[in-house]
Length: 204
Image 1 (tube, rainbow, N blue to C red):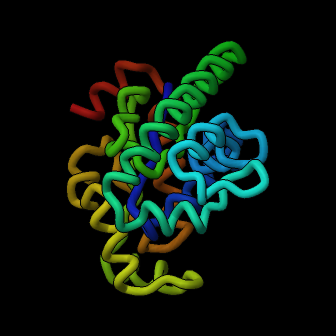
Image 2: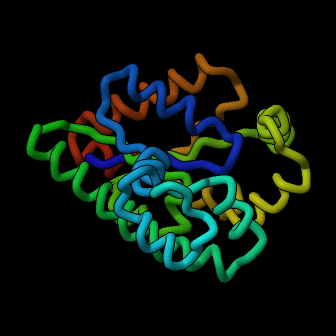
């Protein structure tokens, strides 16, 4: 069973991912995959250097420079996504294959832009973590260098929370505290660890 985990910025996805790890459920971190692809010797560095030469320093991508280039430039962002997304998708497929070989009953794909990139096609079910807008703002605005204007632009780039909730198989409300989140995740894991018929009936 492949379970997708996603959610908009500040919705508690990293906390949920850490909980899955503590439950010893194999988890693929798409953000970590991107870091590897853009780090020293990363597979995406040559193509990014061709497309954005000012963003590569000493054989690795300077994420701040790259971010400044693509953040307000939709065309540049699409070029970057065309370089990164197929590679990240392939790494997710490789992860699933490895875990099938190891006979893992359940794995999690932690992908921030799951719906935006079509990553749900790799999943049997999807969890969306969500929280009220004011909670999201409180969390995000505590981050260094974050402003309301920057948050607004990030929201614009992401699928609306309401649409993610609509497309999810499970919605976990993270604004009610970590214990509530952990209980909900454990319930989902218990459900998905049962028979396929049990899962299908629960989903209607």
